[in-house]
Image 1 (cartoon, rainbow, N blue to C red):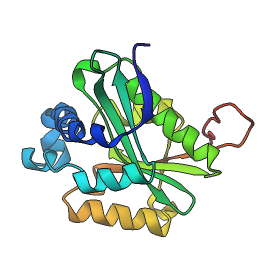
Image 2 (tube, helix red, strand yellow):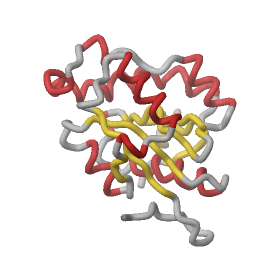
Image 3 (cartoon, one colour):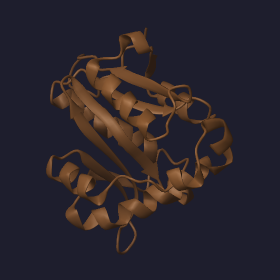
Length: 189
């Protein structure tokens, strides 16, 4: 492993929009199935929101130890009553398939566990071949609409208003087990 994960610093934020835009390019081939336009892929998390997440310790970065160090990925979450909601997870494509995305997810799971939270939730694309299997390998399971909490329903409604149809999105959640001092696994049904 040639990278490390840490809480973001204010000097990191300027690099994150470019990482998000670069990572979004992987979805271009799937736009017809997703019902999206190329412009929608350029609609990124606002820098103001990233700074807010930074102040709340809800933003982590993956750092490649070059000189100077290179930010190669990030994850940003929002706090829900019982857990975290992953707003965005991105890794520069040139650094993909090295475990960086998984390490960022594990960092969020660890943070949630330390804080006594019980869930980490996200939304992802159903019809992109690598997204759901990636999260399932990390212990996330699909949440059916009748099991949405009011907060998750609000998030799904917000996504739909911004062009992300419920038919192409899946809500996935990790139920955090409290088994001891090591990183807790997600519960499996």
